[in-house]
Length: 295
Image (cartoon, rainbow, N blue to C red; front, side, top):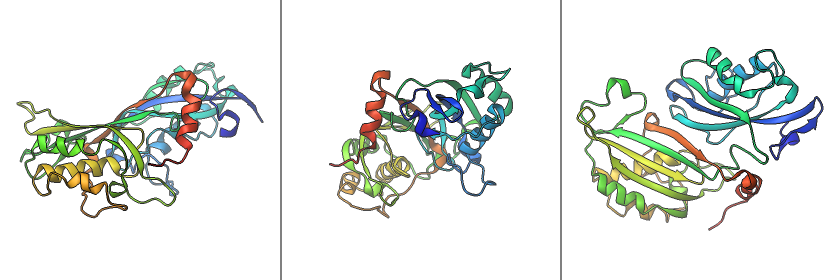
């Protein structure tokens, strides 16, 4: 169906007008095997849960495209997806042509670890993945011997040794810019590892109730497989003194995944925001993103 609405606008398909809808959602990734639907239908993924419930309501098969394919255990508060649907599928008594009504319907059907913020008609040219300008992630981690508070155990990782936030921040700053992040990415055949890391900062966010608590804020045009958790892990080993201050900078010279880079636990990571350009620039951005990147 995607061929009928590649630019995000309604087109005539075999069953009439086809429209594109934007879906904004959040989920606790603790009990999901990542975002992407698996071949084994018994495996619980976010995509499967959302698609199955949308298909049930709309009585039409749904296939979602997403801004960030999060790994198993990773959370999202600001995930964005889109799907294409015959316009007539919205003409049910409960929806009555208004996709915003899907939010309440889905809230009644969905498990508590998935929530839909909004559902609306996508502007012309919109593609949840390829139109995106940037993805924003947050990583929470505690080094306190007690571990995370019971109410934050699902989104706060634990690190066994104390760390120096300033050293981690310096290590992060060395990675800012357009680079080949091959050392930080799991290999995928035919996929580029060139990315523009726009923001990477560490913050001590400790409180009396949560001492020794740190947060990494990471933003890039896109991320490759396991990249964010590898960036975090590389800074943590610098922060604890296991690696030298120039460790992260030297990794940019490597052409393949480095065994010296630990992957930080998934539970501390959340996708919090996806940025898009103005509506009139959406299609051009999607075309630009699809092009092969070079340094």
